Image 1 (cartoon, rainbow, N blue to C red):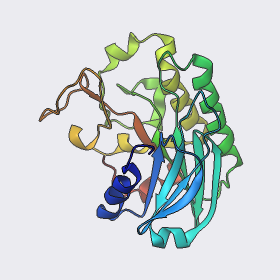
Image 2 (cartoon, rainbow, N blue to C red):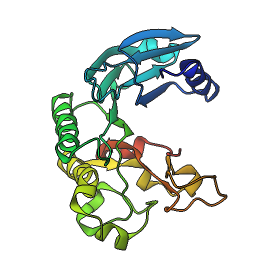
Image 3 (cartoon, rainbow, N blue to C red):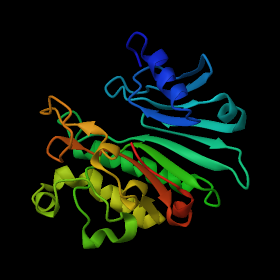
Length: 239
């Protein structure tokens, strides 16, 4: 959001889509709260000069009126609590470290440790929705995944997953571990969608947008997580 007019462009997308709440990641701008036309921008801190990630939220006027709490946890985690009927609910904005030379394996584990600690400390009686760039390519459903993920997965398949080195599987393994520990589901894998409504990332080698995106050209890195008891409350999921 440091780019000129980027915040206004984001507000345009937010308002034109009639969205009430949007979790945002990789903001790369300092913490703060500001209003952009009829949108409210809440940003967490950039507390590490070596990792200027940044997370936050955009809220509509009505959502802002329902906001009872906003807490930036780190430059990769923040959460809000919204008043609603029959009960309040919580949304977490999360941005996991990617599998790149910039971040070692310990950095990726540190993010998941922080997210697990946050979940443990949030009110368990409330529905909690985790949204964000989790930098997880699922590729396929494995028997050990259980019901943490459903059967609708965009990826390169079981053989490709089996041949990944352990260090490339850290985010995937920790996601499944978190879901199983806290009985969460990866929401998108429970909805059957066309690839165009599933993908969230274009691989660097992809130079154009084909009519039928393939797992070699695109990926799903962003996910929504929700507890098993609240999965049926989700009416749809698409990108």
